[in-house]
Length: 232
Image (cartoon, rainbow, N blue to C red):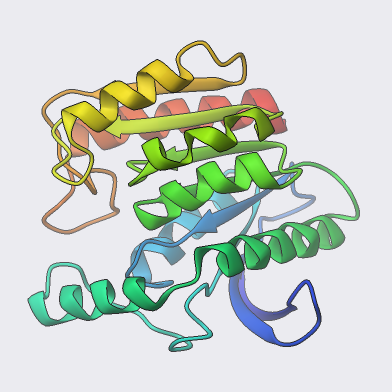
């Protein structure tokens, strides 16, 4: 079952929509699905629905609500891709993390307690890292997060398990950046990095030109195992 709910901001100065997919029966845990720069589009909603089918409560907050509420863009349409880049340029990431924290609280409230994880893609992959460093999330996964090398100073805040999927041929995360990520995080006791050689950014989208089916299935299987181990 799916629905849209309203979530109040941490400071109670506003509220935003979140897509919610609920499993049959009692949820085993909750997962916050963090959008790409294309909004809570059909691909993000599909990911929520898949988590619900596996027994999780899944929530995808609309993080662009302060700029343009309800945006849903297709990365394979050039004009919409450019629109997404423009939205990204206006997006306040620190405010986004606070909205993710509000979503974590809402998830725990719906569960009546229990564990909450998060998984993010592209922009959401970067925000997943920030979520791991700045909130009390129970487990976090980031797919091809951009600019994580600039966030390594926050790694001391990562207290619970974090898995990062890296696209080996990511044109947004170049080899030198990947090297910095490994140098900064390989020895962190809570962080695991997995690299997928030869695949580009966006390889795990549900459909479209960017998907690499083999790499996506491998990464998603690792993601499922990671959440099963750390959320239950």
